[in-house]
Image 1 (spheres, rainbow, N blue to C red):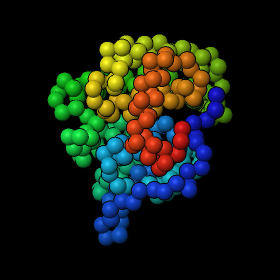
Image 2 (cartoon, rainbow, N blue to C red):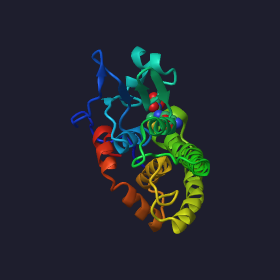
Image 3 (cartoon, protein in one colour):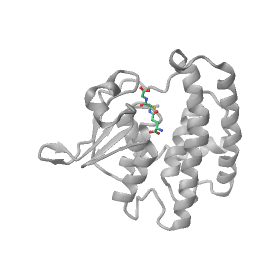
Image 4 (cartoon, rainbow, N blue to C red):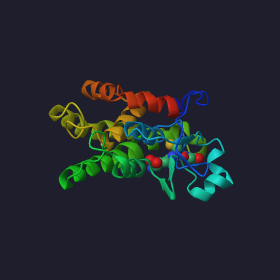
Length: 232
Ligand SMILES: N[C@@H](CCC(=O)N[C@@H](CS)C(=O)NCC(=O)O)C(=O)O
């Protein structure tokens, strides 16, 4: 299993943010991983300008005094939007949509039941697919020097991922377009990045899920996110 960190991202053109008094109003910190690409994707879906600070995890760049002043967790992604400092990829996407989304590009449904369904999928993807499965594999394989080698845990996490994905397969039988139905949402960004991550790790994924992932990653905003974040 190889690392998620993509090839060099320093040469790509980056969007320019509006400035106030010479300072960019919107800055996204972090490139190169399945977590960092999520807010890049959302910013492009919402057609928002931003300045990208292309720092990578485990490079020392998340441990500088400047970045540590923004977050003691020393993790990316991190968004600065005017005076707001926000971490957690899902929270950043949610905030951007709530603040800047318009009818044609909103990433969070407007009515309570739709919002609850969207949140349900977001929590499921983050809790069950990302943190409990894929990140366990990453910690105990790619990052075993830091967290310890644990082949049994890695294998069990891959099996657990496949079991959890049955929920996704069933939902896509009912709604093959997007996970919530006819509209692309924040949940699709989170889910798709986990599917790409799983494929990268060699976990078997159902054809219907691969077809869904191919469809959502054909969106022009995903290609733009790959330019600013780097390819996964
Ligand atoms: N739950 C967080 C996870 C953030 C996270 O773990 N980021 C990793 C990169 S994918 C990181 O910055 N690690 C820094 C380090 O370990 O030095 C999110 O989704 O934003």
